[in-house]
Image (cartoon, rainbow, N blue to C red; front, side, top):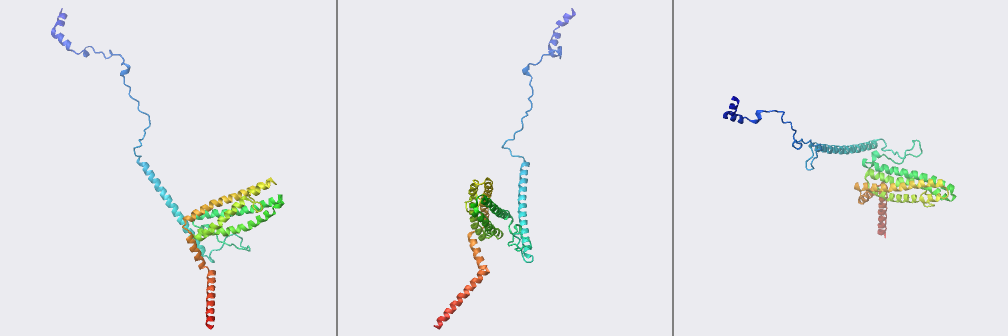
Length: 328
């Protein structure tokens, strides 16, 4: 009876109604339902793609420093090469002065012959002393080309001899082969190689023109030797194909010599173009060649003596004619 009275008390009822529902009977384990699948947010995984630099962005500072360092190093190497070239040129001039100061001046050293030989060397040749550094390689190649052609002419003698053995009618070719070897070997050395050597040694326009004129004729000789017309004393392609009909071994031997003549002609053409290109860079010209020729002629003692004799003879004859005219 008391319980019912207490529960019906209006004040008690009002207080019980105002109590929050969460504090009345709170059970932390009562709500065990799992959240719906779509309500759980999964954090996004970090991106694994590589970083891409935008083209508009400037490169890092260290790349510019590396480029500047590379340019500076290249400039230093260029200066070092130039200094080495100048040092070699000074060394060449110093050795040339030393050789001139020796007793008797520079002694001829080419061709290299024994001291007890009947004939001594006729020329002086030293690439490191006479030729500037930038032209030494070209002059050496031309010297080796002259030697190559000389060896080819020597082999041409044996080729014509072998051809003469299988064909007795080729005696003329054998004789001409010997003549060409004895003629072209010294003439080519004196007529085009020595002018080229002297042109690069003294920067002479006149010697350059002498070389060009003679070397054009030399190139024509190379072409004719490579062709190998019968009866001309050359084991060229025509002679080689003809010799194959008589003997295959002799024909093969002549083909090898014809290939050497052809190689000599091709290399000669290439080197002619190279020398002409170097000639244009040296500042030489036809006017300078004329001046050098006139200066050389006037400074020649033989020419001076001849001119003086001619002048004295003319003056004497004019005086005698004048004296005779006065007597009459």
